[in-house]
Length: 161
Length: 180
Image 1 (cartoon, chains in turn cyan, green):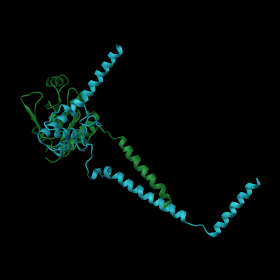
Image 2 (image 1 turned 90 degrees about the vertical axis):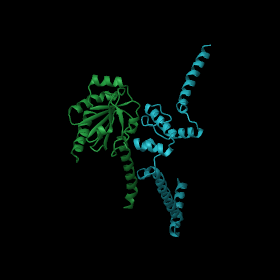
Image 3 (image 1 turned 90 degrees about the horizontal axis):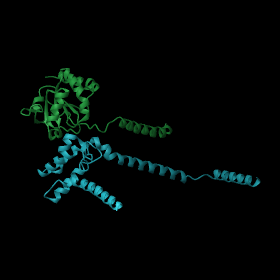
Image 4 (image 1 turned 45 degrees about the vertical axis):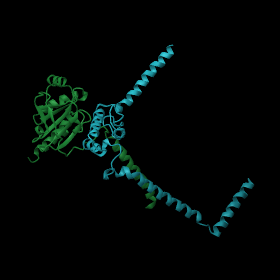
């Protein structure tokens, strides 16, 4: 009986928190299902500036709540995604965007990894070519004779010991 | 020469990476630079905290070098900053305005009468809309505007006597010296 009661309590506890987490976004009503999807994807691409590793969709911070409301109202007013993100970027900077925009100051972020990849491939080819060059080099007859002598000498010594 | 190069190049690259990471250590990710710096201050019109029948708007801040300090009674570091603001006001060199952000009017009024009021006037931003227009994401924040109403500096976090002496007052002096 006691076990059953604790189980029931646990269910209530966790069921409740799970419900709360999902209701934050559900409380924004849209007449159009498509708009609702657009809202959800938009707020999950925007960063909350208070708790910086959370999106506006996930964050429970006061500011995130206000900004969600702002985005919601702008959408109801018929603003496009670009207009909404521009509004926030003008006030909070590119930092609100999880995807950094393409511009000279972010080129390093966007192209840096590919530049490193190209350099690595070039280095790989160079060292491969060099290896092949070394293996293809044949030894001369003179060298072969000395090699055989050396081998015979060492095997002879082995036999003696 | 080429023999040294194969040791020198990786060493140099490592040095560059280390310098980059070292720089990152001394940066605070909580300080997000404001895109509003160098731009005209956002327009606003709010009822005054002290007297709801009067308004405070951006035009009240224009025509002189001004400071707008964003604060609230629920903000703990604002309490620590308040003493510094009082001292700053006492110098008589600044036009200090306040933006009471997402607060209760009665508790904010009580705060000022109990701790002292360093501000020439306060705008009462109950729903935080003006705060959003100014890119406020945490209190306290302090903006400094030149005569033309261009935002020239933003300090995030509480002002300390050191910040006031080394950053705020010198900047204000140089902005005052700019052509009228």
